[in-house]
Length: 502
Ligand SMILES: Cc1cc2nc3c(=O)[nH]c(=O)nc-3n(C[C@H](O)[C@H](O)[C@H](O)COP(=O)(O)OP(=O)(O)OC[C@H]3O[C@@H](n4cnc5c(N)ncnc54)[C@H](O)[C@@H]3O)c2cc1C
Image (cartoon, rainbow, N blue to C red):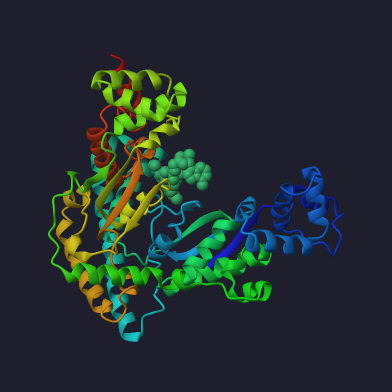
């Protein structure tokens, strides 16, 4: 069952110390809102900040009032960012999490399907009536039974393959993890999980407002849970997502039309536009595995080098760009190697590497999408899961002789999906598995590609996201041979670097 618990929040330290000393007056309510109110006053009042904080603490109602005015009436929303809230979220489905984790400026840590064995707990979508529920439960039971059986077989396979690792607790856990992370391709998107979720009040308000209008009932319930928990401690900072309080405070309705219906309008227009003329699929770009490079800067190496020349030389961009474009490939490579001579695998690349961005189309499994979406410094938009795209089958599942069974399970799940979709097109997705696929569009700059490569091409990364990241990186290297030189897993960083110096 879905539960949202407020685990923690920002609080002025003076409140905490007064409480510890037992000196907090009974009529003073310790709330995170005083921090936002005090910081908002920095721009207008001459008093030192500790005094502004003391004033805000002394008069909480006035702090709330000024938050409402400054944040919502004057539009100075960034002051709400000074308040951080933490939530425990339990009993949420993997599918609903996709909606939550769409918020890029928040933080998440969720139960790993690699480390934790799943007992079969799953969300039963509220949208389903008795007949739909029966269909759904039958499919879910089959997925869970296959997961358990596949886990045993995969564990046996991994133990045989990696018998040298079984002497240590870490080795045993790693081997078990490999079996779990492959067995989970049979698990449905309704599988329950738990996570820690943190965000500042500004982002939280955005999340609550967006999720309140989501087509899935579970996601709307999540929005309510977050709103109820947050508005207990920070009512003045999440008012835009509370139509009644907004009306009370400002005497007019907040316009939610686009949040509520904008996505549906885009989908309708897209369907109509694509149906109105038979579209010719033109060749779009280079492909590597399941990733296609659709576009980007014409000369990404020159774009990054020009940006480095610009910030380093003090000369106008036109001169820097002309110089970068005129460099030979050897000069470009030498320039990048010298500029990054002291870079370690723990250092972010200079921001100038954001000057080149690439657009990719990626066909990927739900298991892989779950990982890709956690990289927040990119634009990631995805189509719904589509059984017509087939499924992703882990290599170990093939080796264990389970590929045919997984395929059959996925086909039966897709059959149930089609039946459920006739009445519940959105909620039907719950019955698809981690192996089912979708298409995503990702716009990623070269700096983030380096970061992703470090984490996801490393030996600790799961194979599916490793394959996708390796394809993204290979395409970036093809387009930007000089500036993508150091994009590699962190375990390979030292050798890649020394090969460059040689
Ligand atoms: C081997 C492995 C195992 C993992 N296991 C789990 C797991 O069990 N559970 C789980 O939930 N996740 C897991 N993850 C995902 C991981 O926690 C990250 O969420 C994911 O890799 C995204 O990377 P990132 O956070 O470094 O950066 P990105 O989101 O790609 O952002 C790039 C960089 O921007 C900066 N940045 C972005 N957003 C913020 C922010 N809000 N605050 C501060 N800096 C920010 C950071 O410098 C970050 O490195 C795992 C990842 C790996 C590689």
